[in-house]
Length: 238
Image (cartoon, rainbow, N blue to C red):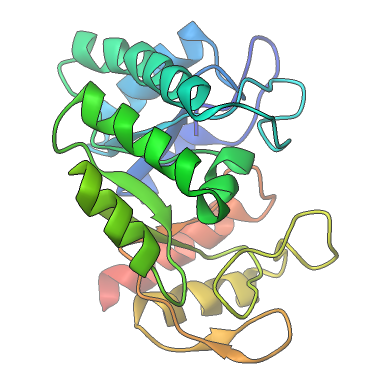
């Protein structure tokens, strides 16, 4: 959420915020501007929603979905910079960041690059001891657990209701057909399967089971609001 910028509007945060427990708020590098960040924090506070910083590579034109060649030192600094920006609005609103969830290409690069993952872990630990990092729930997260333990950073594992998966739990790249689910029934079924610890179909139709702490629905998916309303009702009934 918080991915509008200037006169450009993205998502329906006003109606979506009451339906979620956690909101990943853009920090200005892929979307969001200072006023949007301030308003997004206020909206989350109004609805009692935990605020997660959503830092990215510095890529407004590419919406943070382009892979940039940044050194680990660059990544630590740019993530810490964004945490500080969003954290200032949180402090002014009487709250604080609850966790960090990188966005787009940076998020995906953490799955494959130990140095970049450690760079983000270092930024989290430097900003505030005990600040959790949210990462992709995979079929095996042993690597992430080991590096996070070394850095002293708690982890939260995330799965996606509206994205297609590869067999190992990685997300199907957006450049490929079928990477983003558009059918509300499929999104809802996948979300409920993950929430219940049940298997669901990967991109090739094979069963995949993930253990996740958080379910993500993208705010820029046209079906997001309708799916969120139904998903909230179903989860509340469990």
